[in-house]
Image (cartoon, rainbow, N blue to C red; front, top):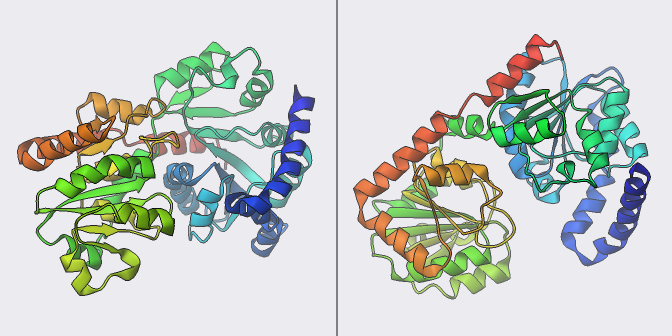
Length: 414
């Protein structure tokens, strides 16, 4: 199985070299990896020891941040290395100020694993949520470098728990410890005889709970919102926008909207705006006059959504109407904001839990979206109660980072 896996990785690499010429994202994926060792050599010396965090994409990075911040503060003599698999994570966070080095992770070949680990010289490695790369894990084990999985989330349909998943189970067994989000993950790991598990919860709760203490002021939002009730629709895809259009066009005059698409695509943005019958303005084109007259503000840049949620009275979080995956519901929830999402969220236990608490509402079509938005707008008590559920839920689920840090300290991993 290991032989076949390694062959497939090399075949995938060959095809990526060709496919990059036809796809911008794949081009970033391939070309960005060519800079990995240059970036490392510019920031590290042969004498440096590091703490390595690997994240699939942006969401996993956010989960890792609370632990990264704490470790960097407590162990300042170590360099912090952050690697990404996906361009959607790396391109947004490549200039982050937290890590000493931020790079793409080379593809999971035996040679790449040896070279990369030698280059960064990690004292400990952290993999976030579900990033399991066999050759990297086998090399860490070979060099007696602890590997920790944080905010792990496992599902029974994953390969680890299937008859054909022998290689992936073998890779899992190299982890020094698993910190998982829920008891389902713990039971699944126990089913394949992995007992080195702690249910710590999701570190994203720690991350977002601190956001409310920060300076979230945005002057343009102050000018735009004024005394309006504001619905912020974050990380939307076209499928999400399609179910929102009817309500936006028929909403009461005291309701304003912020739309922050997941991807900034001018053609899709203009197509969406052409279907709105109220005054709109794009963030890149705002003036004081346009901003105060607009009912809908479209955010055509990245990096501000978390602060924008602080101005929301109601939030719609995108990704759930299609198949690309639900985006972060915790960011608006921490501000005590009712959350509305699409229909596809069965792989997101945090959404299922918040729905069961009546802090989140799932809609399957435009009619349902209009119905729940109408109720949340019209009934201030209902809106307030729902928002309080969200805020309390965030506060009652913090502490995962402290649990992980306590394990690291008590076991002298650094």
